Image (tube, rainbow, N blue to C red; front, side, top):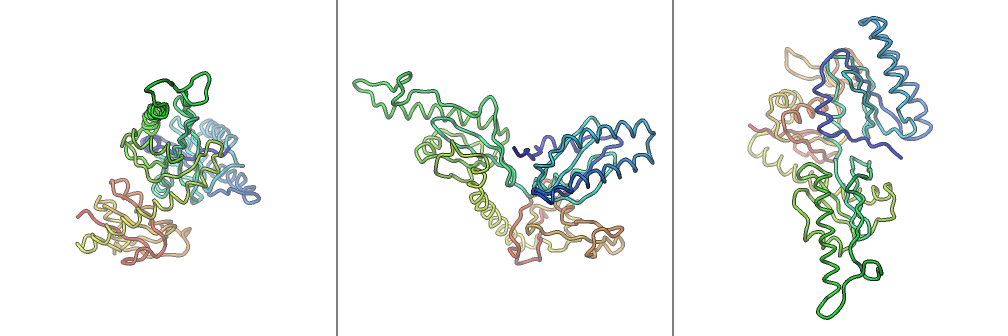
Length: 370
């Protein structure tokens, strides 16, 4: 089974809060399929070798040996047969963490007093964390999703089995007799069950306004809508029963609904940008975005999907010069990622749109708070 790649906001904050030396971050692009993925373990060994070499210039042999053993242990735990598009390793300060990302990352080793978490920050901004609730009057299932990855939740709450009365069940039948409507009684029992589902869903999500896709037959979705809370956002409802479908099949089923949701968000963001442009509160300049994002002035950043640009910052002129080779000395490998990270750090929003969607600016635009 493919490993879940999501890093929760709480875990991300923990990684960002760790201080000490040496804290080691190893990042590398990986491959999902054979034969490309055969080279991934070899390249990781090269990065471990480079890490060891750098540490040997700064630490004593005993310290280097201990870290080397930890790296070897981490390497053994990497599931090379089920990697995604990027791999990030965090080691130090009592933390040993392997993260599989469904987005590519630049290959590098960072040894510092803090972990390099930018890849996680950018991945969380580009990929939606969402939930899929598969309603059923047999067994209701819950799934947690991130990008195109979906994992079934198995907890004290889910899967949740309906154990109330039903027609045709000799052990727990619907009541009968004069003045009793079995169908009304049955539906009330289902509502009671779906109230329990709703409560368990809120507890499992643990955050307000989380996006949820609800799957189920029309009757079950209607009964659930009557009793559910409003602590999360239902972004789509899909018809049908998925009790016997695999996680992969359900993931494919929800992707079109997720794309429609992204499109609605993109159109709302573009309309908001248009209003900011009319008011004169915007910029299309990468240099300005670099500064404004760090000053907390960015209320909304809109970026075309997969847009990246490397450049050299001129401190005297306060300008960027775009370059073709991000490996040149003194080059910022992706200015866009830096702007995204700073915008999110100061509680701005980031939305991604299709190429060509931003007509007022080229590829990227920022609406300003003031």
